[in-house]
Image (tube, rainbow, N blue to C red; front, side, top):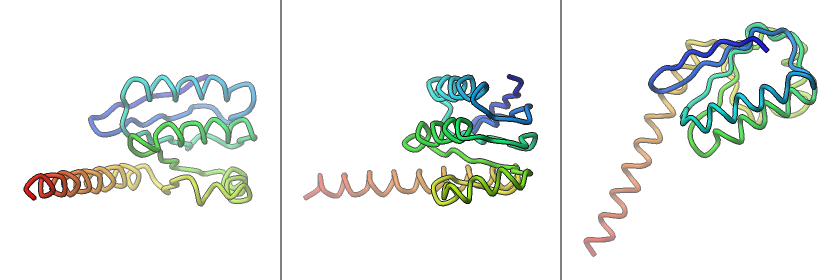
Length: 135
């Protein structure tokens, strides 16, 4: 499986350099996702620019990544160029579960906005706790 990883401070871009995510490739892809998550990557952007075909095993790998990042940060699918991949995601009703952003630049902006929101939520939670302590 060919891929490229671009690690930044707030996010990691995983670009698959394969046209197909099928039952042969899906286990490897899941392993890479688990490895990146265990490494402490907070936000993962999955660049699907080169992907033309995804089968049910491929969708399973994508859902695994979505579940892994649900509690720690963001998992974003971006650059879905293939109409058949887009239709498969819609038919499977996964477009309501997955975060799909049209471009890589918009995905990076999305990560920054999500991080700001999480930071604000954390601050509010800390403020609530400290005001409870005051009482």
